[in-house]
Amino acid sequence: MKKMISMKEKLTSPNVYKPVGPYSQAIRYQDRLYISGLIGLDQNGVILPGGIKEETSQILYYLDQILAEAGLTKENLLHVRVYLTDLANFDIFNQLYATYLGDCIPPTRECIQVSRLPKNASIEIVAEAASLS
Image 1 (cartoon, rainbow, N blue to C red):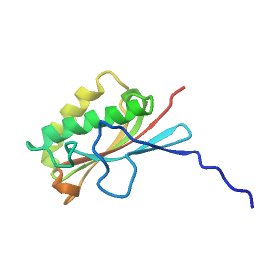
Image 2: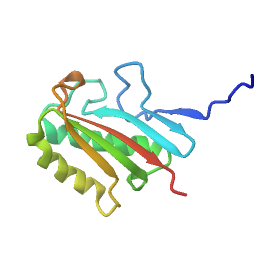
Image 3: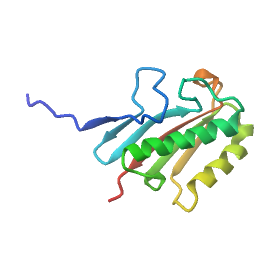
Image 4: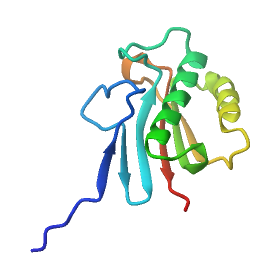
């Protein structure tokens, strides 16, 4: 049987907290980038105080850092999955997210309320991006 050579590449940004479990920050496979769920932790793995605004802002910063590590930008985002522990925070999240995207063509998106997230985070964002060339 012929051995398959993996085209999977692990990507890690030094500007993002270390994973809190056995997973990669991001994986590039062919022209796709799969970004693991990001929560609003500081560099020491502690949830940021202040709630949804601070956590969302930190996650969007981390998202940019991982995209940059892959040579991509928010323009390359294809799909974003958002988990909120309280949909009452949707408007706050949505406002910050709209500002983050600016004039980009928005990616597709899901927004789901969940009962709990790791480290008692208020929000978690998962993303998929691709090279558009």
